Length: 158
View 1: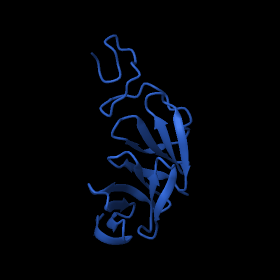
View 2 (view 1 turned 60 degrees about the horizontal axis):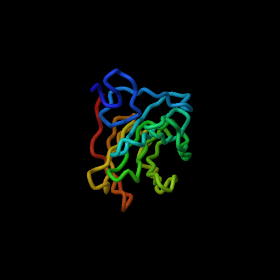
View 3 (view 1 turned 45 degrees about the vertical axis):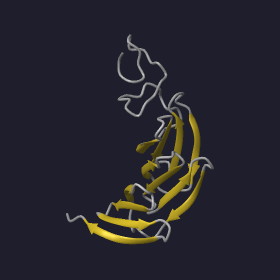
View 4 (view 1 turned 90 degrees about the vertical axis):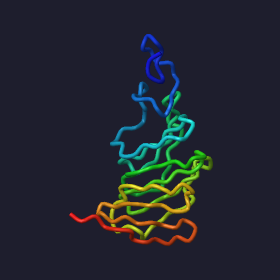
């Protein structure tokens, strides 16, 4: 067999895995720049963050957009999905981090006031109790989600 998602003759099998090295199906409806991508552990849901201030959910098997999540007021620069596939963390040039419940299709927590600039990267610890986020100013913060407390870990020098 060929790479994941292809038959021996090279045709698309419609199967998708996280190890897939190329996307065969166009994602209709994504008209702006894509800054962030995250995939659920099952490999069936893809989250995209774009320059239209939206978080989009896609079915990787069909290539169809499932839903648009509104809430950010700036480009969505980063995204990650928790191991259960239920929660998604996004960061934006609107200076916020947002935690989304994908099943309920809504924002359940907004973390504002941590970054004074665009949030360009964010990653949770294994338990999803702490979020580590980096901004365009080179500062990296650790944030306790339960207590909403942030600590500056370091700042990259130029």
